[in-house]
Image 1: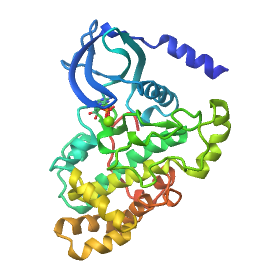
Image 2: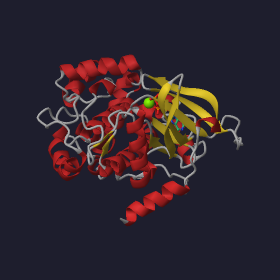
Image 3: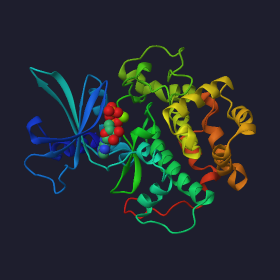
Amino acid sequence: FDMFILAFVERLFRPTYRKDDFVLGKKLGEGAFGVVYRVSLAKKPSSKKEGDLVLKKATEYGAVEIWMNERVRRACANSCADFLYGFLETSPKKGAEYWLLWRFEGEVTLSDLMLSKEFPYNVETMITGKVQDSPKGLERENRIIQTIMRQLLFALDGLHSTGIVHRDIKPQNIIFSEGSRTFKIIDLGAAADLRVGINYIPKEFLLDPRYAAPEQYIMSTQTPSAPSAPVATALSPVLWQMNLPDRFDIYSAGLIFLQMAFPALRTDSGLIQFNRQLKRCDYDLDAWRKSVEPRAGLELRRGFELLDLDGGIGWELLTSMVRYKARQRTSAKAALAHPYFDREGLLVLSFMQ
Ligand code: ADP
Ligand code: MG
């Protein structure tokens, strides 16, 4: 009951917004389910010319995305971009649209950073806040990639502990927050909240095939259709144990780890080709390695070399994430305790961590 009062009071004093409050800036993204803009408040022009908020005008799935963001801001705020407010906006022209508002976290996603020739050194500069002058090489690159993976798994652990599966983990949905100098997850439009049964029925058509785990469906097909909310609350911890839906995100995070180690897999075509090869190897990464390593070029060999540092613990972690059977994949919490993370990462100069 206290929690309810707190949530109510918090909601009461949080600023609310209406359509006319915003000045639209640059379009940041456009998908099948919505358009995203950088915006500023009309009454309080931002010090930055481009505005310090992000607005998503979403279709019917916006309702789920608002629900997920409200849950996140109470339970694991640091995992995701800072959500401010969501509301339903109806107009004669456009009908019903959900408007969602976040703080503008920063200019670049992990995708932008990974596609640069400077990767991973560009990330090192952003995290530490200065250009480091130590000699470039595998050890240093591994340390940067390890820090990115730790931040990603930390954010995922927060979501999963809250009962939320993201289902669309990919570099485009990981934003670098300039304020906290850490990576945060965005885009909860395809997420499922298993504790209360929201978006319980898998919408497999929402999933990005490049990063999707082979099971596709989050819950096994034997799972009965969505129970009503109170029943789902009582049952879902059991279902969670049985089906381990969080391992879907772990597979996607494993593919991102792989892309960071192998530059050739960072392009769409490279990743699609890899997915085809892995499928042919029955999703066995060791078999894939055996098939490509003998005829590998310099760049591919360098990726294996990076993952083989410190007795191959990087490769060990990777293979514990990218596995055919969800049940055999590690969890975000267990991954964070993996010896790969024993070695010191980058020092994050922020007040947040
Ligand atoms: P969709 O993928 O459905 O178009 P996203 O929520 O992924 O929508 O947002 C689209 C793009 O907008 C992101 O890839 C990112 O570049 C940018 N973006 C989204 N949220 C933020 C935020 N809080 N801060 C900065 N940029 C953001
Ligand atoms: Mg997105």
